[in-house]
Length: 296
Image (cartoon, rainbow, N blue to C red; front, side, top):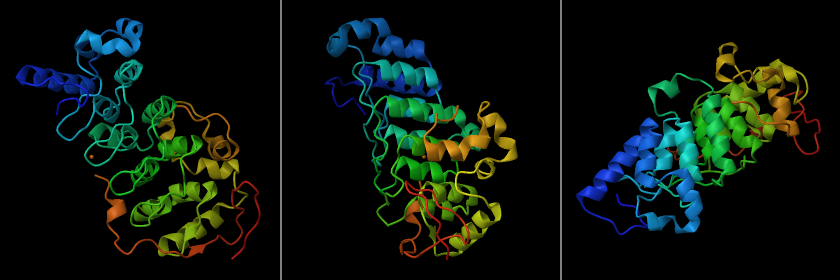
């Protein structure tokens, strides 16, 4: 599909759009410079970049997915950096499913990404996008947020990164499901534990019962280093580029430095919506702005 801001059309123009999309996917920055312009030249022109009569950085495919979405989906950091530096970039554009680039960044759509359980490299891209003005709490056509995507794909590093940057934990999708609902679909106790410490209650479901027992088994107060280690598995060290995982939960609760480093189905499976009742682990101190003990 042609860029919405341009009047270009015809086979030659569409061929350039396809070439740009392929370059974004493959991380071919030189090709993008040829099609969109050199960084130095673009920065000098600023808002007058369109006078170059080159492609817009906001061209899309037939599903309205942008170059930035392609580059992010395939983890092309240099390409993302180049596109974000373009004075004409619009980072919060949506595709035909109302997904933004941040939704795409939180998915695992390639075989290579699916092999990385907790992807610190992709978390770096998420962080870059947020700092470049990407909306963090935007909802897609099902009401799902980027955080719900990260939880659905069971990536605790990306989930943590979003929480660190103030993702709204309490938003619900259009069926009433919150992030804990998505963790429950996957029976992901470790992510459920993280979400609990961030402020969500254990649901009054079988998963919620298991989560309460899991939290009680961990013992200790909310924010303890021992519990933080349990957010990552033993084989996850290579995915986190030397991050001190013993402080993982403490960082999330206390606001220290953040860590190093195609349809979502969970939100549309259960037409009845999530259970409204919640449970609290027997002897666990919940994390909040004013921590207090609660026992069931």
